[in-house]
Structure formats: structure tokens, C-alpha cells
Image (cartoon, rainbow over all chains, first blue to last red; front, side, top):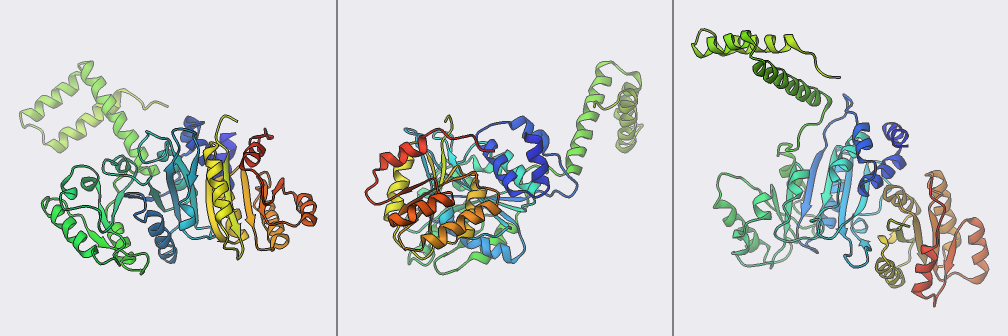
Length: 309
Length: 133
């Protein structure tokens, strides 16, 4: 069943994508799905951007404004929006997508997810969902967290860029000295920048950031209401490198080669391979350059074993 | 059902009365369902796209505008085109008696008029259904 869904997904069947994401969200058939997402040479890693910040700061509205901006640049965008699930009833009101505009555009996919209580600010198995979206051809994935507070740092593991939204009147300058999310943010948005105290908030945050000069974190003032700062924000996001592990076909093969070589080397070392020992000794006595010694140990190690199927 | 029901609630067309749908959304949430609130002024195209992307089990449409005989059939047609006709449809709002059998003949599973108790809606959705394809 999963294999058939994966075939349909590769043929661009949106219903299959949606169903596979449901399975992933419920933690069903995870191994089969993972195995089915074979890297294809054309599949590229998406840029995964997480939006976090307290409830009501404007995460959904901001995403709703970025979608048309990115569609104009021919990006295909998927949004995984998490909202809390009740610890008492298991119910959830998933109310993010209605702020993201109502479109029937093939280049936009929005999925609302319930985040189980106590599991942090994101729904489970997001990594699998992101790979499904990449396999379908989305090149930008937005993650929206549950409106959350100061310790919501798990988003970093899933995303290339973490955008933290703050709003005016949300604390004095000591708030920005606290450890946690501010340290993990790659871009900071002072949202609702049409409000009069936005400049003050931006200045306070900038001052706190300047105390760690080794890390440059742009602070962008954005108002979705006044359509301000959106292009600047995307520019700041786009200029950052992709942090997640490269999962392209070439990168996966390269990793497999590295793993195999390492295994061969350790086997040869444990077996006390005399050639290997001679090479290491010769290098230590400076009789071989590091380049020659490297070439030699690759030859020795790969002589004795074959990669496993 | 061992997993929460996923239901999309939406208003189609030019109809700004969303008090009722919000009350229903809250009741279904408290009954343990996952409610995807799509909100006001949706086009049939956008509603059906939401159903596909959200892999929903149910759609609840609310209409108080009198346009139900135009908009509901359009949504049902588009659901067939998008191959999501397995998703159950319920309609709420101001639907004249005479139109109820017509909508049911088109494939609407249930119509809830004014005065419906929230418990009735919850009980209806909690009835066992055939597993979807």
C-alpha cells in the first residue's frame, strides 16, 4: 500500500502526498515511507524555514504574506503548521491556514498538524513529512510552531533557518538576555512594526544581540498589516546557508563511501595488516607525504573488502 | 475510531456570519476531533484544495446566504474531480425544508438547521463509517 502511494507521489499525485503525510503524522509505516523516499538525482533539498514566537505574534499572517511573494519568484511552497492538541480531550482547533489566504494554487500546499501536548512546539515526525514534500518537488518548506515561549529550541533540528517573531510591548530589556530561543534564532523579526514602540523593541533586541558579536543575527522590522519589510525578510532568510544535512542522491552516496572506507580501515587496523602498519610508520617518519600516505591506505583498505549490499 | 476525526469547517461564498460555525468548531474540538478551521469567504476551489491537502474525513459547510443550491453542488462536483468524494459532507445554516432532499440526493450526508443541539452533531460524526479508500 505504501509502495503504491509512493509511486503515485512520484507521479505528482497530490492526494497520495496528503495521505502519506497523514500516515507520517500518526507515526504509521514510518520505516516503509523512509525506505520509499529514494533520493532521485533531480530531487533537491528544500529550504526549510521555521517560524516561531508566542501565540498571536503573527506567524500565520506573516507566512500568508510571504507565500505570494515567493510564488512570484517561482518557488513551490509547502507549509506545515502546528497547533496544540488538548491534553484533556485530544481535540484540536487547527486555525492557522485560514490566515494564510484561500488559494487553489498547485504551487502551494498547506497542512495543519496537531502537536501532542508535552511534545514541544512541533508535531511529531516532521522530518519524514519534509522529505515527502521534497520528493514531491517543493523547494521551500515553512514550519510554523505552536505559539510558544522561551524554551522552544527543538525547531532548530528540523530547519535550515529559524525565524523568531517578537512584537512590541512584549517585555523589558532583561527578557532578551535570557537563554533559549533568542540564541537559536537565525533571523529575528520585530513584527507589527506599524506599532509606535516597534523601534524601541528592535533597538533592545539589537543591543542584546550585539553582546555576542561572533554571531550575526539580522533584525528585520516587518508589518504584514502595512506590507513592510517582507522582501527584506526573505532576502535575509535566503542569504543564510542550508543547515540541514544534505540528503541529495550524490551526498548520500558520498556518505556511504565514507562509512565504508572507515569500516575497511578499522578492519585492516584490527587485523594488524602489515602493509597498513608500514604506511603509518613511514608517514610518521616523514618518509611519505600525507597525500601519498592517504592514497596508500585507501588502496590497502579497499583491497581487502567489498561494500555491503 | 482510534484516531481523531479530521474535519474541515468552511464558509463558502459571500456570507459573513461565522458565529455558528465557530460554536460548532469549538464543540467538535471539545469532543476530541481535529478541526481545521478554513474560515470565511472561501471559494469552492479553495475548499476542495483544503480537503485534499488536509486529508480530511469530513467537510462541514455553513451557509446562511441562500446560495446553497449553487455553491454546495459546485463543491460536490469539484470533490469528484479532485477524487475526494469519499469525504463526508454535512451542511449547516439556513436551508429551506424543500431543499434538504435535493441536497441529500446530491450526496450531502446530513443537514443541520437552526436549533440543532451540538451533541447531535457530535453523535452524528461519531457514528462508525466505512473505512476510506
